[in-house]
Image 1 (tube, rainbow, N blue to C red):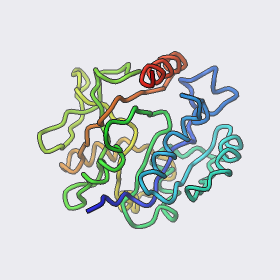
Image 2: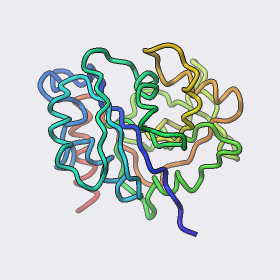
Image 3: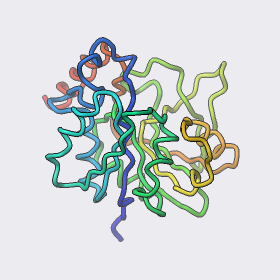
Length: 241
C-alpha cells in the first residue's frame, strides 16, 4: 500500500540567519544557493515529490526576496505567513499558521538542512514510520559523526523502538535532528503565548515517551555558517562525479 505523506508542510524561513553573517546581510538564509539552487527549493522540491500539496512559509528577514521567489512555484500551493512586523520564533510561527495547517499532522522543516538521498525518499520513509497512536512528534535524525557540518555533540539518544531521549549537557549523543519532522497540530492549540520556541515541545514529548525518530537514509548536510557552504558544495559535487 503506497505511503501517504502529510498534505501540508510548515517551512521555517523567517529566521535572521545570524550565524550566516555577513552573507545574510543581503540574502535571506533560505535563499542561499547550494548545489545551484536556493536551500528553500531543495526542501520544497522534496515535499512536492513526496506528494505534499501545500507549504506554509513564514517570512521576516528580507521577506520580499523569499516571497517574490516563491511566487513562481506551481507544484505546491504556497501560503506566506507574514512575520515582518514581529518574529514569532518557531513555536509561535506554527501557532500563527494553524488555520492553514489544518487538523491533521503536518510536516515541519528548517531550510538549512539538506541531504543526499538514499535509495528511498526520506520524507516518504518518515511518513511511513508515523504512528499517531504512540507518537506526538516524529523527527528525521542523522548520525552525529557521519554528517557534514555538525559542530555540536548531537541531540538525541534513540532506543530500539525509535523513541528519542534528550542528550544530557555533559554527554555526546549519536543522533542529530535533521531539520524535518511530523507533528500533531493539537500540541499548539492551547498555547496562549504569541512568541515561543519549538524545542520545549520536543522535550515535553520525550518526557511522555511520545517523541520518536526515523534515521535518515543518505548523508545529512547542515549548512548553518558561511564556512559550511563550501563544505556542502564539495560534498554534493563529489556525489555526482
